[in-house]
Image (cartoon, rainbow, N blue to C red; front, side, top):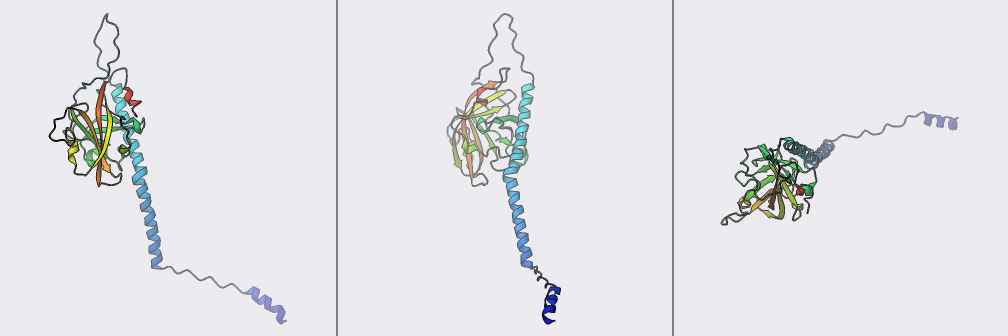
Length: 263
């Protein structure tokens, strides 16, 4: 009997419950820190890449809308010619119209850089404050520097690592690349020449002839400033270009530099 009942007794026993895992304060804090780290990483990815892409696309759409608005505005009436043969469209000229200084945060131009894609068309407004111009609009014009096409230094600024980052790729320009500034009157074409890095307090780059305070300006220059490195502030990247031509807004359309501006 003993040998028959013993297996039944074993089969009737319930297995001992597994020991419960004790929850410690250290473990909870560790889990919270890991979760916080993941959230911070996701925020950084959003802020540095995804957010810039979304805001940049919004700025480009605004620049496109402004360009389309100017394209649909009535053109100045052509002079009446009863018997003279038809004249070709007005060619680019070295004597562009003088533009007034814009008000703070007043949009007055669209900047195209074909090297960065056919959709690169950022609005340009007066002033370079982050709160009023660079963050909500895109690109800003340094007050009291030259206007497009004028003798002197036409100086503009843009973010490189936030708020749409319009100048994210500024150091990748090639010599001869076109930088086209579109206004209601027409297109001002500049050609990129060189890049340099200066300290954040290197304001001499905004002089009529950059870094040459004793020399009177005779050239027409564009200066584009942005932070360096891309997500830092220890330096400023400064890109220079020289004026090539002005193309008035006519039925002939935009200049060839806008469609084949990459050198």
